[in-house]
Length: 187
Image 1 (cartoon, rainbow, N blue to C red):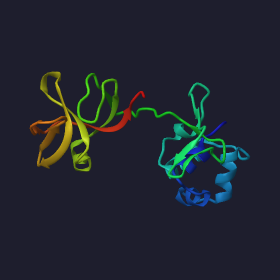
Image 2 (cartoon, one colour):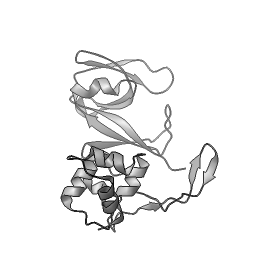
Image 3 (cartoon, rainbow, N blue to C red):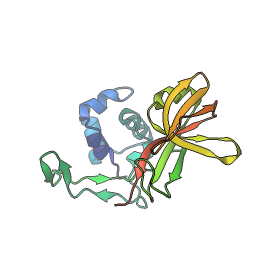
Image 4 (cartoon, rainbow, N blue to C red):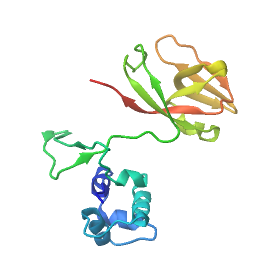
């Protein structure tokens, strides 16, 4: 089985020892290294333990043939562009179960025509964590409101629509809101 344990660990800036310490129960850095390189067989149990330690889904650690990975040709940093020290691949993101999309038809605010926004649906008890974020809010009769969540008072949330001159909108007790988490933009 081909895994992306090393790539994800490095992308998160973690050492073998840090991942080993985060496993439940903790293990050794040597074991994590063997699982990364394939010198030790990766069982479903190990995938689940390492996924939890890396804060990803277990499926993200498995490289499937039909899932196109992208080779990293260069790394752009403050000192310019460099070739990666080791062969690295990026796995394109996959939407989670609660993800909904917003397709941008005309430019507004920071968004351009053709952009796609991925929004993670959250429940009312999580709204405070979405303050000052762009959100999609369902309204009655199949309508929606999209803008910046600027406040919450009890069951009422305050949304500032994008673009100049927008007036604050108040929405009472929406069942969920979608927090914009990913912008997909063609260059």
